[in-house]
Length: 47
Image (cartoon, rainbow, N blue to C red):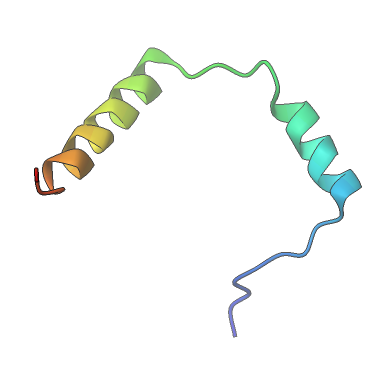
């Protein structure tokens, strides 16, 4: 059976957050995120 969740302590979560601070997305990553969001919002009906 595949694990679907992880139970992390608050201390462990804080260490992960600290390690991710200051990391920046590359222009390629930004373009992929932007395109994905455009596709997502295109599927949402305008009221």
